[in-house]
Each structure stands twice: as structure tokens, then as C-alpha cells.
Image 1 (spheres, chains in turn cyan, red):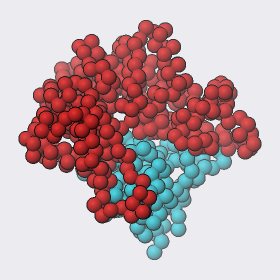
Image 2: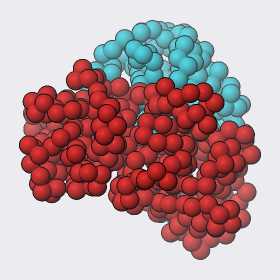
Image 3: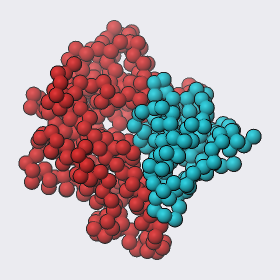
Amino acid sequence: MSPTIIIGWRGARTYSPEETRLAGVEFAGHLKPGNIVGLHGELGSGKTTFVQGMAKGLGLDDQVTSPTFALVHEHGQPPGLYHIDCYRETSLERWRQLGLAEYFSSEAISVVEWAENIAPLLPEKTIHLTFSHGLGRNERTIEVRP
Amino acid sequence: MIVLGIESSCDETAAAVVADGSLRSNIITPQPDHTAYGGVVPEVASRLHELHIIPVVEQALAAAGTSIHDLTGIAATYGPGLAGALIVGLNFAKGLAQSLSLPFIGIDHMEGHLWANFLQDPPTADSYPYLCLLASGGHTHLWRVDGVGQYTLLGRSLDDAAGEAFDKGARLLGLGYPGGPAIEAVAEKGDPQSVDFPRPMKGSPKCDFSFSGLKTALYHHLRDLSESQQLKRQRHIAAAYQEAIVDSLLDRLQQGVRLTGLSRVCVAGGVSANARLRNRLDDWAASENLSISYPPLEFCTDNAAMIAMAGYVRLQAGDRSSLDLEVKPNLSLADHSRPSQTSQGHAQG
């Protein structure tokens, strides 16, 4: 069973940050408690913007900002979304010590930016999305990795 | 009053002692290089910081020339930060307070940053109100500070922090880490007007910041150049990119001054080390007759001195936390501080 079938979301091509946010809202509508989402893509390809939409789609009105330095931002009380960022910290041991498994085993959605940096720690059921810049300045393609 | 402060919200395990309003010690232990343990982390360090908390506290007490029995108060960060990291420092502090029967106070990490300003010169009645721009890798916030526990968030970054914009820009430009100093060094011989990068939020009536679009603009600018052109023009692009960040920070700070009418400004956080930013800010402050200060950098990065100082002023003011206090990873100072009367138009709580 591929993740594409599980979530029933086909990806998106967007032409503005607002559209990328909307795609995140739409994507979040397909998620179930405890889902883990890995995001892949270059700098500036829309990952954090997409997560802003996901939070909105999950009914969280928190301000979502980049967790690059904080490593993890929790949203909601009790947490409904763990926004994890592996850009800066790439040591698997450090992530284990930070309790990554605890985030992943909760009822909340976990979304992981730069997921490729901790690939061995991601459960098999992780849904992977790939972000890429298009030819136009604001064009982005978001694909579900089969 | 002698207060021990403990900070473990992210990477660092840190402890400090503040006695009668002055800093006596400030110890930060970076997380261990795993090669030091032959690549194997001892079982005891199942959580980040567990290995370091006791030695760091012992060092802070020794460096302050004090013993655990001289302490009269304990403070620790309880949020925001990483749950698994915060819990180590907070539980240690609560256990210590309980066993020594000492007053205990949980400190918001962000409140600590606002008190870093007074680690060299303790506050006086004339110190308030002031504006504090905190610009680091993790935060870009503009605060109004009216006194102990009276903080108003005027604006914050809606996406990336200013320091993050430097770091990610440096990576796009093929420069080193940390990105701030790397960009600054290359930009020195560049023309800041060479590329017209956007100034997100410029002219906005609020004081919020945004740096994500700037990073994307840099990506696109570089993508349109060949590799040799990128190298040839690197110093100019770096200078223009730096100028866009500096311009944005200055513009938002100017808006904060316009909105509040305050004349005291403090600029903290790692980004405040940037020489171009300081030149521009100093020129502006001189022309507008503002007083501007920059806390030493060692107090701007995550440290326990600021937590001990915030704990000291809060305990002095009679504030206490229950020993039932739990970590709050998504704590927001704007939600639990008392905004000032003047800035919010209603009586303080």
C-alpha cells in the first residue's frame, strides 16, 4: 500500500505563497492522528509556508515560523502538530536524545523539514513530500513521493 | 539574595549565579562531541543535558565562590524550547529547591533575553521603558519593556529569523557557517546597491518582520547566473543581501520608535554583532537623539546568566512558581506577561 493511496492527495503546483499555504490546508484534511510527514526540497522551496497551511488545516491558530534553530516547535494545547526541522542538527544520536520517538508515537501530526537528514529514524509509514522550484519565480511543485 | 539560574531549553546546558543583582558566574557546556566517548554515548545520557547538569551547576557555584547552602533562590527555564531538553534543567532545579526549601521561579526563556541587557549594569528606575530588538538565529522580536514582568510584543518575524536569513543566505552563496560573519566578511568589498533585493514588510504599520521572501529572491538571483558569474559577483550579491536584512531591521525598529515614542533602544542577539547593522543603527540613533545599547554577545546567545538575572528580579519582586510547574515547550511571553498601561490602554493585571 503506497502512501499516495493512504492519503488520497495528489500533490499541487502553486504560483504564490498563498497558494502553497492553501495546498497545506488541503493536504492536512487528508491526515489522520499520528501521521508523520517528511518534507524534502531546497532552500526557499516552500516547506515552512506549506506547514503554515497544514497548521491552519488542522484547526491550530498558532503562528507557524521556521523551527530551524529551535529544532522543534509544538503547536496546540495539547499539541496537535510537531513541526520538526533537521536542517541544522543532523546527528541521529542527538535526535534520539531529544525524544524524536516520543513525538512520533503521539497522537499529534509530526511534520519533518529536511527529513532526508534523519532518514534512518523515520518510521516506514512516513508520508514523503518533495518540493521544487518551478521555472517562474513563485512557481512550486509539491509531489507525494511514491 | 543569591540565585542559581539553570537553562536547558535547546543545545546548551548552562548554569549561573547572580548575587544581589550582579553576575557572579556563568557556565555553558556545549553538548559533547560523541567521538569523545568512542562514538558510544553512555547509557545515562538517555536525554540531552543529563550528562552535564550536575557538573555545570557545580562549576557555576564554585566559580561564584559560593556553596549550595548559601543559595537563597532557584530559577530555571520552563519554556519555550524542546520538551526533552527543558525537563532536565527544570526537574533538577525543582528538586534542588525542594530539598533545600528554597523559593523557586520558572522563567520564560524570552524574558531572560530581555534581562540580558542588565547583566553588566543593573537596572535603575530610569532604565524603563525601553525597546528591545532581539535578532538571533532563532528569534526576531521587537519588545517594549516597562518593568519587571511588563513586556509587550510589538512585532516578530512571521517566518524566518534574521540570523537564519544570514545562515541560509550564506549557504546559497557557497559561504561558510555561521553565515553572519561569513557574509559580512565577503560583503565588505561589495556594493550594497548592486542588487535590488526586496525589503519585506517595509512601510508596514505593524512591527512584524519577514525574511523568507528575501531568501527566495536570493535563490532566484543566483539561479539566473552562471557559476563563474556567481563567483565573480559574490561580494556584491552578499553586500546587497546583507543590506536588505539590515534595512528591514532598521525600518521595523524605526516603526517601533514611531509607534511608542520611546528613546531608549537595546539591540540584542547574535545578529547585533554585524558591523554594518551597528553602523546604520548608530547613525540613525545619533540623528534621532536616541540612546542605543548592545549587550555583550556572550549574554545574547543562550545562557543561564540571563535566567539567573530574570529569576533574581522576579524573586525580589515576590514572584514564586509552584513546584508542580511543568515544562511548556510552546510558551509565549506575549501571552503571560502584563502589557504596560500606556501601550495597551488598560490597567495592568
